[in-house]
Structure formats: C-alpha cells, structure tokens
Length: 215
Image 1: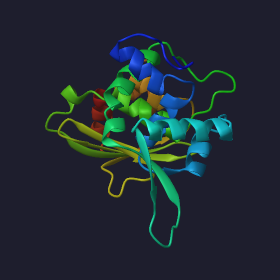
Image 2: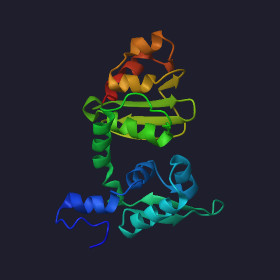
Image 3: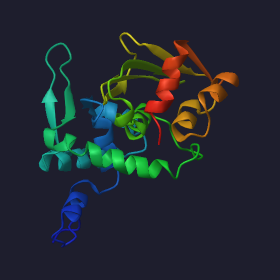
C-alpha cells in the first residue's frame, strides 16, 4: 500500500486517493474554467510550489482526470484540460464549495480573491430551479478581473473575461457586494444605496441575479 492509499474498499476513499492531496482539488477547480497553460495555473494558484504543481498535474494525467494538448500555430503552447472523467467531478466540487461557503465571512488576512475562486462561487451559489426558462447574460467587473456568466434554462456557463453581449453589467466599487448578495447578508437595495456596486442595464435583471445566485 502506497502513502496515498487508505486501504479501504470504498469509493470515497478511492476518490480521495486521486484528488485528496493538497492543491489537487483547486487545480481541478481552475481547469473547470477551460484549458490552461502551466503558467496560467501558476498565476491562479500563486502559493503552490512549481514542483508540487508539476507532480499534481502528472498524477491527474495518470488517473485520467486531466490531459495535455498542444495548441496549433501560432500559439505553440501546451495546455492542460479536464477529461470527461475529470469533468464528472464538478457536481462534487460544487456541493463541497457550497458547504464550505457557509462558514465564510470576508477574506482572511493574506487570502487572495482570484478569478477562478469567484467563478467557483458562482457555480456553488447557482440555483438551477430558479433559472428554469430563464436566459440572461451577466458581466461582473471586479477590481482585478472580469467574469462572464450565461444562464440558459437552468444551466450556467461561467468563465473569465467579458461577456460578448451582456444583458446586465455589474461593477463592484467597494467591499464584497456580490458575495453579500449571494449569502443574503445584503439586498439589492442595500448595495445600490450604499454605492458599493454599479449596474448597467435593467435593475430587474439585478434582482433576478440575486434570486439565481444564493448560498
């Protein structure tokens, strides 16, 4: 039995042998956003040592969770991406993220707010039952990055970068207004009144946002 093995004939034990080591789940989280170069993963996880990132990626490849692909000219870069087997982890990560979000307030000293972390918050807070028959695109501008979120009849697509044709733009001006909305700590009226957020578009779509994304 290797150091990673639990010696238990159990699906959960097997899953932890594959993704239970430190940083592995966050690497999978970042790859949920799409293919990434090694440097992209380092940027999204700045505290991970380079040798640990290399080791975790190698393990994910060996387990069939992720794969490498060479981009065509002119990029000539190698990207890592999840396999179908790897993408099957998304519901488990969403459930785990939702569970963890209930214990969170604001960022602790030294904690970074990353695009991948906020994108995961969108996935964990999304309420598909409230999105039946809904089609709406959001662009969320934070200080360091911009995210896009597209909702189509109960399904969510979220990623880094602007939305090509947003129905509503949400711009954070101060504090953590988006997270406060998701947690129910503040209302749409609250964040608009105190100036912590600015919106471009129909206010009703902002209210819909607060209904669609709630921990």
